[in-house]
Amino acid sequence: MTRQEFEYYVPSAVMPDDTLFERIAEQLSEGEASVKSLLGGDLYSERENDLQLLNLCNRMVCLTAYKLAIAHLDLVLTENGFGVVSNQNVAPASAERVNRLRQQVQWSLDDTVDELLSMLRGNELWVETHTAREVFRSLVWNGRLQLMYLGVANGHRSMLDEWRPKIAAAEAKVQHCISGEFYQELCDALRTGSATAMQNTAIHKVLQVIGADASGDSVMAHYHVKKLVEWLDGNIETFRTYANSTAYAANTFEPYKNEKDDPCYFFG
Image 1 (cartoon, rainbow, N blue to C red):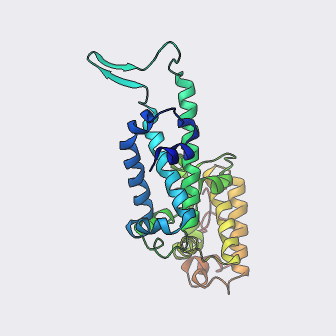
Image 2: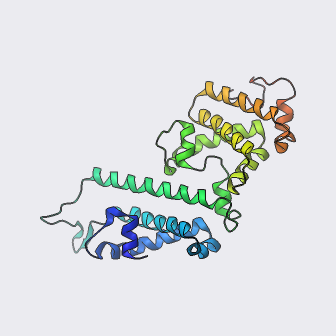
Image 3: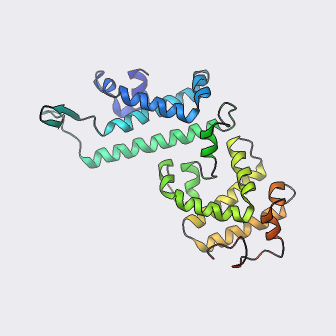
């Protein structure tokens, strides 16, 4: 990674000399390690063969390094302890401005990771890795796209950690309604980039349920789960995994009602 490349991906880090770039060498190594962890060793070794992939990887490296370095770029160690770099021409920025910069860098990093994951779906060197399977254990894998279902208009990937407990609870309820096997089938279709038009529609409907439940809207959760089950039952020949599940057997034992003794009952 050269200084020119770093400044291309992080314009706010442009400096008149190599001072800053030299100070973040260790963080650049951490950024490289993060990318390698995400891609896996095989794909990481091949990334230079795909310019789009390489571009996203380099952006992730630089943003990760910059994010890690921001907190201490103005610190210097003196014989009396740490001091803050300052002179008569440039004074340290306020904590508020530094925090705004951190937030912007974090959001840019979030969006870069989302782009990478979207691009990696279906890549034969990636889809069977541990990381791929961990990311796609959930249908809520992309911050910018999926957080809209929870009513988060300007969502980013780092916000998923805050929402994950509620998302996981909602997913457990959905799996109870449509079976864990069918839910995993939809996750696998996303991971491998093989989702059909009907599977994408099913994913959208499931995400509507998860979004309403996780955001605490019980009325919409009731509505969306009812519509989801009715739609799946109406297209049962398309969804064989669901058709062969105990969830389907329970749902069709009698006309679907969202009652307290129903396996699909929400907020019981």
